[in-house]
Length: 195
Image (cartoon, rainbow, N blue to C red):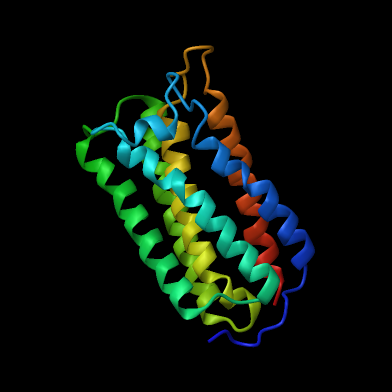
């Protein structure tokens, strides 16, 4: 049964950011690097772990929309968000087992360090948010999904830079992922102030 929570402060702005974050859904179909989209990579036995977390975008959109409209997520939705984000984070971290250490070059060092930094900062933020009260606490399940997405995005953006067929940078899908990450960071900042 849904709780009777109020709409959080800044709900209209948050809903607009949720719509902007739907670009993350499009990123699944666009070439990220080397002309390969996350949708294509998910069927590859070696690349699926990199690609799977990008499929969190629709779940994030649903969770953030629900929070913006009702100020909370239901118990089942929250549990699902925590389970899916935990599995995604484990998938991201499992990629480190396949790499050689120490990583060669600055690019690969960033590919190792950035996702871990995102997870540490996101974990601290999630812990603080869950200890609070009101709307920010209720945003925690959506934050968990966003942290999983952001950590994987950091890994892929750092690790696959320069692997585009068309330039020395990323494919269009990577740029859409950057946009989506910026939107998620805006939503997180807005949710933290909603209390």
